[in-house]
Length: 162
Image (cartoon, one colour):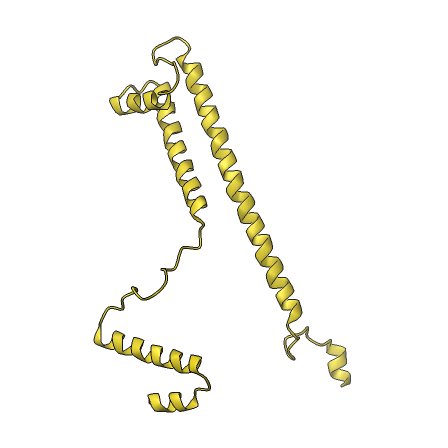
């Protein structure tokens, strides 16, 4: 069966593809694992690394906002208190001063603004990427010649007259 495909191949690239496909089929039949050591790199995800990092930052900030709100509502558990102390580690804010609630509110508002900015950055990128891809597909469709049968349907009156 392989001989018929090899005789029909026109160039070296096609022959290479046929042989690789045959070898892959044999590997699957015998159940062997195919090593990726000889290949350049593994396929990366479609999501850019910077976007993944920003999404992780957003998730951490949302968790921190939740814990700060828990602390403001009176939850004084050790884990919550530890998180709030870490949130104010580089400032001179004591957790048991009279203006602590105001400082907590300011910190929550600051985190919400940061989340909004990170989200807008991701949204701008997504919109730009979508626009770019749609434009590319549109212009590619203009360059392709129109194949018969894919155009608009003829009018009923013209069909009857024909």
